[in-house]
Image 1 (tube, one colour):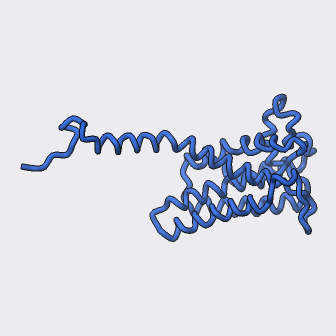
Image 2 (tube, rainbow, N blue to C red):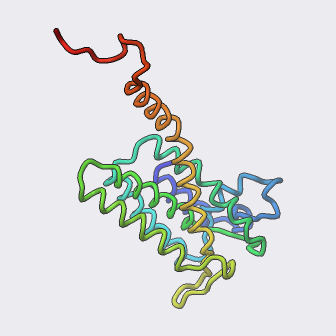
Length: 205
């Protein structure tokens, strides 16, 4: 799903009652679609505005990093998984917002940047990835389901940020593992001295 579609869907759900779409762990099995729509729910105009700015930033990161179709698929698959991860804090009875999904998108952009040919882009990707990890740790999600931040008219759910990063990382790993295994297998077979002679390079006579 493109960032523009994400923003449009967020605007639509902002006209609806939050309880219609938000993530509720008590309804996770009866209404699993809430693991997708929960990201589109916002508790105030300020909440929506901040997340839309975050979506624009993640969209720019994705464009600059040259994310692939596989990267986009990993982000899409990590979306519901991000909210299922919130069940680790059962006291969080309702959740809405894009921040968890956006943290996952930023993690994927960081990974893609770290694999670029240009050394400067690789360092940007590594620094972005390290910054995300440090941010998630500094938010101490293990200390409570919600945190109040001065100047915000809504409470933050820090676990959503960590869950977004971890979910995106897991999906990246699963989608790229087959190619990595195939590459390792091909490399090992080409260097295997027991391989048939016709599979090994020969010295010209």
